[in-house]
Image (cartoon, rainbow, N blue to C red; front, top):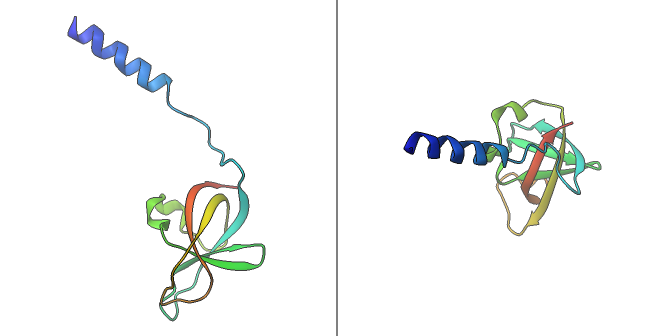
Length: 96
């Protein structure tokens, strides 16, 4: 009986997973590797560079120079050593 219950619960959770691979209200961006003056990875959106504060939360497969992505983000108050663009927090990012 426990095995049956476990299987039912597993099926429920697996079927309820969100398989959507798009970001709503996203913009197109390009990832760049700037390894100078304290900078590392930046994201160019509409010819403006942004410094992501949480890029490590995403798979390392995104860390490819000139990679096109779709992302949703919010601006973050603060400064950084890099000072090459505004800080952003990425809430969603997918490959383009």
